[in-house]
Amino acid sequence: MEQETLFDRIGGMDAVNAAVDIFYNKVLADESINHFFSNTDVKNQAGKQKAFLAYAFGCPMGYTGKSMKEAHAHMDITEAHFNTVADYLVSSLEELNVPGNMIDEVVAIAMSTKNDIVGN
Ligand code: HEM
Image: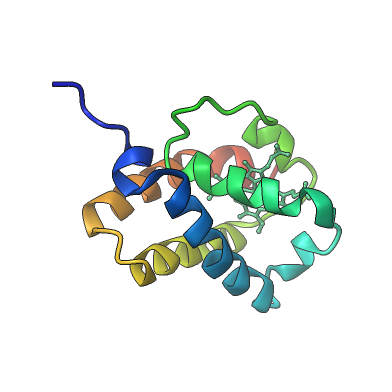
């Protein structure tokens, strides 16, 4: 039998929508990282936030946005910034009662982007 994708097992677009509000409230409330998002175009924000989470959930529909290197170029994101965002991703999914083994899969995807995002 074909294995369902991580995205489907987490709950698909419904899970992305549920996680977006919780995750971004945490990110935007944290003064150590919210300045990164101060210039984010409000009109595009919801779409980019969803793209962020869909990417972290394994993006089965195929990701058509910028590469992670391009999307985060010249932002001077440090390892500490990255780990803060990754921690909020985990705590948001915990609040939504996503099972630990699936959270581990999300963390593995997030960590695979670290070299392209940090110090770029
Ligand atoms: C967990 C790893 C991460 C993933 C999977 C991720 C994913 C994404 C995606 C998919 C986009 C949209 C790209 C586009 O099509 O334009 C994006 C944009 C962005 N990301 Fe990340 N990101 C990660 C980590 C971070 C971190 C650590 C920061 C800052 C602390 C950050 C800040 C931003 C900002 C400011 C934008 C641009 C928003 C805009 O264009 O207005 N990201 N990210």
